[in-house]
Length: 112
Image 1 (tube, rainbow, N blue to C red):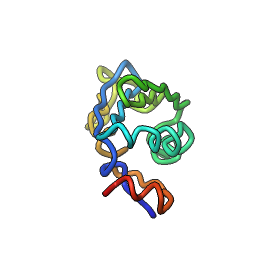
Image 2: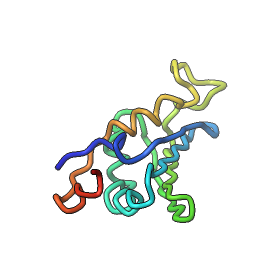
Image 3: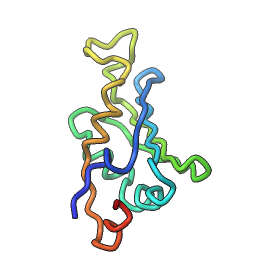
């Protein structure tokens, strides 16, 4: 079953220079293991192909039920010099929530 992250999490994003920071927070504690299992740095990098030109790093925050992603070289140089409309990367968090993951039927049972 394909599920958009919007069904499992909410998110928040910001910036530090040319690096976008996206927090992905599970809506329920039982969703966190699904995020850990399926939302890898590699998948996030592929999802933002054409936007993120550097490394994507993932940090696990189990006590918060959250993952934090750093997308390097993703903001056109950063807020003060970027010519992008969204120089601080605020639209990247809802863009991540559009990413779909493939989960098993058993895992889909958690969503009910």
